Image (cartoon, rainbow, N blue to C red; front, side, top):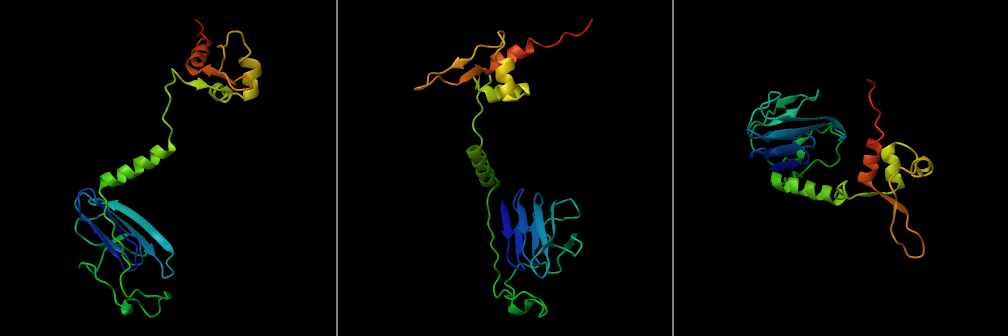
Length: 202
């Protein structure tokens, strides 16, 4: 699971297995369980981010079931208030604070998701952006692909390499009104390159 708190004086607690609690608002605090982790942000009175830090429970002195905040140096400290979060009053902030709208009610938003949900969302996003790979044994390369593989320019490939009698024969697929652009079987190009490996001197 995961819990996040974005409001001023917010508190995020996520004590499930491998859960992460994140508090990114002003004077936020976070608490996690035995196998969890916390993420904390320290902001100045103008809401600028000063420090951000994360840690797993059991590291950096972080204990399970304890509320933590960040000090002015960005170090973890145990929060003075170890009680359950409550909505702050309008007087909660100092009168000298430049915030124009002190919170009458906590703006916290706590969102809980299972780790499976998060992984599924990431996997779907990656799948939308990554085309399935075509096995090299059946892939067709155009002149740009061949040039990239051979580390040369397209013009050099077409004029100096593809024109060699020993280079694999191009495939030209039929196209309406014009001859198709040349394609080469990727595996044949790779095999052709391997044939030109220099032999070590005896």
